[in-house]
Length: 325
Image (cartoon, helix red, strand yellow):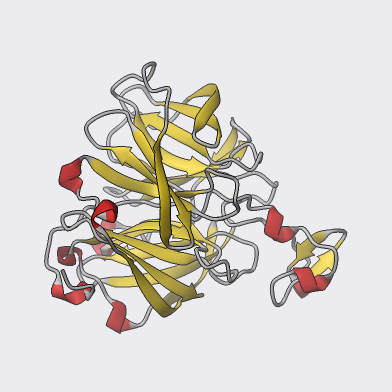
């Protein structure tokens, strides 16, 4: 199979993906300004955004309170909703100011979250399937401040069969990268990014790394499950309540594990997100059932569940998805 995206013409599966399960606050802590990203200064042990006077929030913290939040998206209507979280507690919610931009008639849809301009605020990856455009929507909280499309030579229409499967810094250069997956062929490819500019790319090769939709597995996103500070890849079973973790070293697969403790999950629950909600350094799992409007959060220690928390009040109609971030 060719690694050239544009030689593929297979129907796509739409996935919504995470930036990283890595601790978002770690990059905002500092001893001096040299520890901060360009354009930011160290103020009281935290990287601030220079003259703006605001503190960096992290790539999944929309309200700058130091906790990762959950982003909901309804593709059929373009509706969005941010759940402001305090660990596993749902405090409040707000819609993103994107009603017109995400109107279904525009063809645009949300695909991922990451801090692409390194200003300390989560940005959005948006996709337009007909033309194949991938763009970064720069955000300040719930408001969009700018748009930057990737090179048109990188356009991927829906009929190529490629879907965005993760957003995380795999080469640890401080910039989030884009992880792509092909559902029919099972191929996985990583784009090394510098903001909205792609540098190199890499294919994850080998029979053991080919995961097709027919095999019953689908990528959920990325997180750190073995505490080595490097992103791993999380997969969910499409025909059962199972999950599998690929332990990665950069873009090299080192090992894989099945996550335990699934016997008490109702079949209506779908693995929808991986994120370090309690900020203990371990990626947690978020399960959701639209039939009951219930979220089940598993606090994890590596690949083992330690505690479980249920939250009511989630959308109870089909079509909503947690955009893992």
